[in-house]
Image (tube, rainbow, N blue to C red; front, side, top):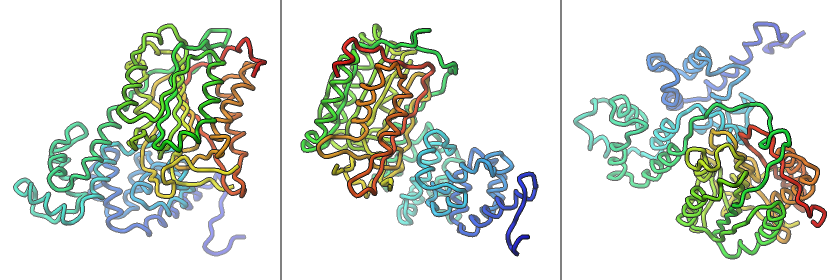
Length: 455
């Protein structure tokens, strides 16, 4: 039996598609005219323009997405991405996504281009008065029709006045009318500059040293601390000390840089990128203990630096001495504003309640990288006020415990995930889940130090 209005069907019943289309119809009913225009704009380049121009409703757009294999019941993520961008996050529930899940998946599954995202961000920052001034400046080259900020930017693109590699017209307009939007353009240029084409990757799980499945250590390892306030440095002291101890025990030469400004960080990165000692090493490790936001970390002068930008200095092209060698990056910093619900704890963010979660982040799309984040994107990370970071404590403890057992780094990080995920604050209400991401092609196992029993 079934009650009126409900749809019951087996997995083999073709009518099962109805329930998914009903969800799309619900989403359509909650979107206004401007939302539809936003969706059409974000789909430019993915759906033929003629089809988008004829679309008068969200359901029309959805139909085109289905036809272009950009949307399906099994994989509705692209629509979730679109809803997230246009700030219709409440509608994500109809696709069985949460805001946090979308943020976590965006670095690897994003379909909307950086350029398209930039134009949409700019349209949101151009108010009616700004638009009026911009239209006045370009009056002779514009059609005599009413325009929104989005249609204005779309027209400039269609006329070839702007594209992903030519933003001169846009920069001139923003400089004259809305100077603050130049920051968005500069951010776009930085993110575009570090996009890397993925090379062929050998998917076999080999070791970096053949059959022995062991990796010896490099002479050079950089620990970077970018702490905005001197008081924070003292609270990280426990984490610093144990990090230095453990990696020296593993055979690394440890270099520590405290209170690093953005300029100083670039100098450190340039020195390490060009370091001739890498030629004789087999592994590179880079640790950052700082404050952060989604996909980025703060320098001591409070500049926000994308993690991907940091890691891009060590690709095979930028740092050939580290080509085909494992490059590990461990980041102790918040990656957003959310607190994972379930020692005195503090959040590693300047203001976690107000931290935005719009930055894009992923490891370079190249082999032999590993990124270990203290928390999943979108969430804060915690530390004990006396014992230090939950993540760094656990990482060091498990390196000491599992390296002598010949465990590989991914197995060790899995154990770290399990350990940190079980920790809660004194009230038992706040939790944390680290997240590793990697393009390692081979199993990475550290040699057991001769004095392994001394720790």
